[in-house]
Length: 105
Image (cartoon, rainbow, N blue to C red; front, side, top):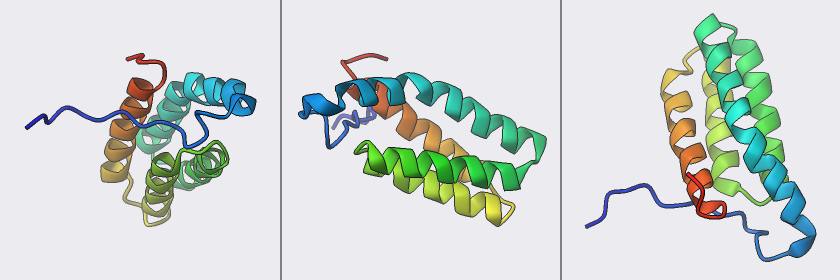
């Protein structure tokens, strides 16, 4: 059995009208994850929840439902003042998106 993370692809990947938006989302994802980590490290959990909500909205718009679901979990954790586990999960999902985007790592 293969335990390696599986790639995540946008549900809109086959629609050429979304190619540029998907590319921009994936390229910006690492920076957005870094921002979430910084918020968690600094203890600014209200800001973490706000930025995670924005990420969830963008992920939904661009067809990345798993990213949206995880970002919503981060948002909830931030609101509950307990973001560490959700942040770790979001990092795993972000990695899988990178795997799915043109085979990039």
